[in-house]
Length: 79
Ligand SMILES: [Zn+2]
Image (cartoon, rainbow, N blue to C red; front, side):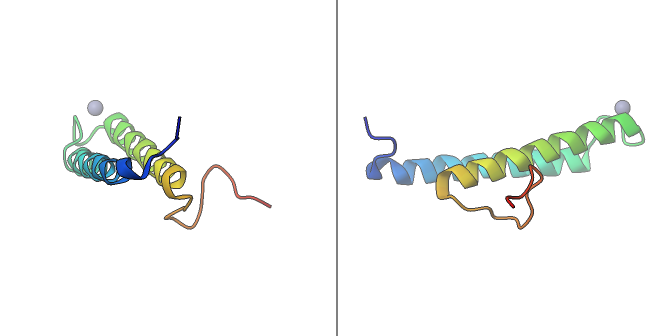
């Protein structure tokens, strides 16, 4: 079966937009309201979560469009 029919593309874009919006909101909330504001552990957890989301987002964009929207890639560059 076809991997990605043209008809499905707008739907995929819509889903992607929703996912980006959701992750952006989550990112903002995690930045604004860590579980305890002065706790290093919670700040670290929020940072890790943010990094993970960033990686997921980049991986998704790469898979969908074959582009990398950020210059450097922390998984290593090609020689
Ligand atoms: Zn804490």
